Amino acid sequence: MISERAVREFDYPLLALVLCLACVGVLGVYSASLGSGDSSLYLKQMMRVGLGLAVCLVVVFIDYRYLVDNAFALYAGSLALLFTVLLVGTEINGSKSWVSLAGVRLQPSELTKIVIILVLARYLADLNERFLTKRQLLGIAAFCLPPVVLIILQRDLGTAVMYVPIVGGIVLVAGIRRKVLLTTIAVVLLAAPVGWFALKDYQRQRVLVTLDPELDPQGIGYQTRQSQIAIGSGGVMGRGLGNGLQTQLDYLPESHTDFIFALLAEETGLVGAALILALYLVFLLRLVGVAESARDRAGILVVVGVFCMIFSHVFINVGMALGIMPAIGIPLPLLSYGGSSILTTFIAIGLVLNIHLHRYVYS
Image 1 (tube, one colour):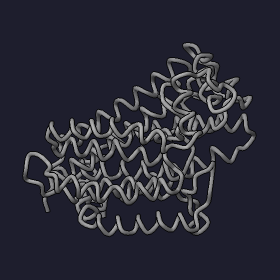
Image 2 (spheres, rainbow, N blue to C red; image 1 turned 180 degrees about the vertical axis):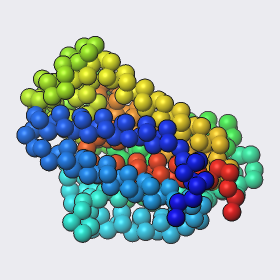
Image 3 (cartoon, rainbow, N blue to C red; image 1 turned 60 degrees about the vertical axis):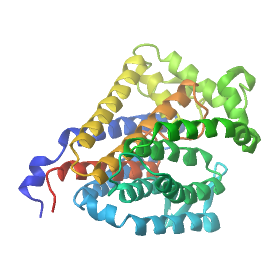
């Protein structure tokens, strides 16, 4: 039974923002389906949004403190699932990061982002000190490294990289001494050359092409170049939904997934692209408001983790479309075609709505 208080305190503006973005995504996928001739694309996207919304509402009414308290059990299950993917997973576009469950294809590495947020919130919930100790930082590393290593072994470096801003944001808010932060940055910079040579040839090429688009315009740099052409050709008002030349004539591969921003920018122009970014901005500011009103440390850290997850995805995906970030296969939250990404985002939003709903409740 849904209480009167739940109806009264529910964050309707946040849910409305989410549904607006999801509808824009459905329109983008619909436009892409016109060019590909596959009408099932946008129908599947609508079904995924509907499923995501249903799961979101279920999460809203499961007290987030119960989920935080059981985070370690969820963590163990996630590691088991990630390991299973290595054994029996399906390889798509060079990454073995998918598994089929009851006929449904799932990407556990996406859902594990939520689990990591819950685990860190649980681990740091009772912290009384102003700054994290070295022992606590080592504990955070111990929780985060196993799933990241398993995802790298799945050859999905892009998804593995996205754990960095999530963990980094939570650590910054939890409290880290300036000396420790600067030392960490220095170590990362010094280790960068080693990391560079650890990358595969095609991964290094993606970085180099970002710095010099003319380096391989018909190879690795092709998608980025076509994305830039699509965005530029949209002008101020765009070519109209379903009328984008780059996307409808299939000059831009994967336009309904990683490059859906370029598709929408070409067809709705600068005005449409600006409105999409404005929706994301308002959405993120709303998350800040929920974090400020959360009544316990765990709630604050969960919302911070969700904020960092959404922000980093938007920043990198739009950067990919503009050619200022390497093309590493990062979806645009709520807009890109894909079930696991949409489900993960809706679960994260459900947690935020849950925390907002319980901001005055202690029992």
